[in-house]
Length: 103
Length: 479
Image (cartoon, rainbow over all chains, first blue to last red; front, side, top):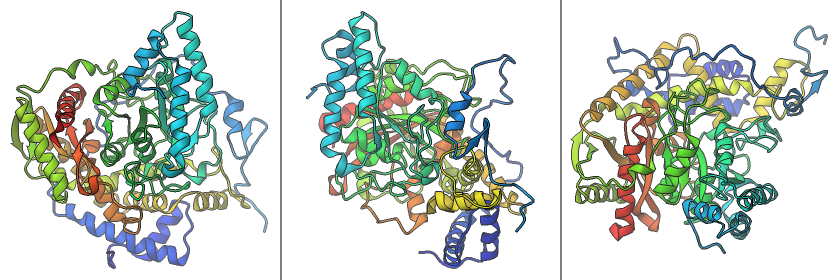
């Protein structure tokens, strides 16, 4: 079962949750810290590997900067796209105020 | 009841006019009616859509046209594949009743081949899981024993084929999500070479790992389905510039002289019944003329760690798009940041949140080099070790899953135990090589066991050649 790890603290998890735009209750924060700590402990098995000079691999293909010809093609139907959004208005996605809310 | 059971038999009969697509569809819908309540393979059954489509196919045949190689064949689609105008949920609350404005390329190709979509299948939310228990709509059950899981994340697609709800289905495989449920449900399941099948319209989990592939009751049906959906797609920049895979030609070649690798340093953890079936698979291929060769893939065992840093990192980035602005559901709040937080907190399930946080952590300043950076280097080691092994062998055999299907709830409280289900499947997602699970007898509780065949990138046909021989051996009573 999961033990307490010193690899990650509740403060770390709280920051990560905020970066990921997630809200955690105190209980959820404690549980997530335990679970993520257990995973990071398991992942420590690669700490000892000598990886100097090994080129990182980001994907399995050898494709780089795939371009298409610069020609007009079909695109998605605007009304259909907007119809699938939570709120649309005047042919745009509508969102709540971004800044400058008076309390 | 239609007495043809394979996709190829159905398509042949429909194309020649001896069977109507309408009768085929009614027959499968009746199967779904009879058992779906017990199995819960589907998030959505498209009975009316399927009937309309069957009428189209029959009209084509009546007019002397050929609907294509999958004429009248019912297909179930994992519910992370976009279907225009039809809800696509990823088994998550966050997508609400979102209806995609376009079809996935694989859906278009199936339709162009005459296939009939009968429903959208359940999955672990956003394809994150190995049991299909992490669904906002409840678990799917294994048709062979409904107290057990079907595997995951494509558990609904595996169960649909195993239950006889459709002769074919599609899933997606990021770390084993086709091969592991195929093994647990006793179907064939294929993860093709990365880039062989377009990912356009597959809602992304780990973009450098995800591949779409088929489930089927026979190796030949899986080959046909993969031939139909593969081939270059200019709309997917990671699609390999190759024509469709040519697979069925390999099925009758036999394995005389084929070099089959046994990985001597494979991570332990497979149960004795699974080990016994793997040994039997080597024996069967050797008896058919193959040469069994011992090889080492030293970095194989580090796959799980590399994967659980890389896949969550990619997921944390991919799932940033679900913010309540463009798709599905929104929880209202006074400003956008609070709206993002409320929508995501309410919309995502626990496992998805766990992985988003793990990935965000692995990518965050100060930890990037130690986690994500090192994982990418381990990924290179794994690809290199596979390439070294493939210099000496044509294919490798391993277990597809360490155990037979487990009881629902068994691993629900221990994320790491669940992750270990994918020990044998993950490494080929990291390398981008193809892999497939072939049913090869049964183990504990009479549950199915799958043997995994792995091959180098773009050697999918060689993989099918070995798989076809395993199928013949299994049918011959080897179990």
